[in-house]
Length: 208
Image (cartoon, rainbow, N blue to C red):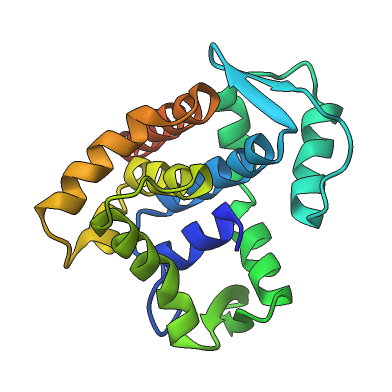
């Protein structure tokens, strides 16, 4: 499962598919996940607060392809924070739809007061709970996690979701988490730091 997909499931891990975070934290964390996927695929890098495209070939995943096309089409905008804010506007729907197409979530529309709201509800609660369970188990083990898993842990911490992963974990897991994020490759470490700063600024500002 891709980084943003697992982040989505951790952030919405309940029977109704309701978010556990401030909406801005959820959407910015997902935006970080989408950029992180492109770094992990080798399509972009992040350095000095700027996003740079290093491989223009389309990724296999359709959503990653769309995000890369947006980066290429707006090449004058390179600030990581600008891209996090831009992608956050649609990240919940984009990732929710990807999980719906994969058969992990069920798209549900409800009409109320002349408005239609869309939610994404779990089909199998065990599948939805698995990413958080998996990360908790990783942190209890001695071997270092893979770079994609370490990236996901970094974004989980950046968005304020750590308690969802570590709620039953011992002190060893908390200590490991504090060591894993600083050991990320530089582009991913910088992405996590910018995501955390963007989440903090949005929550302070009271952004919806």
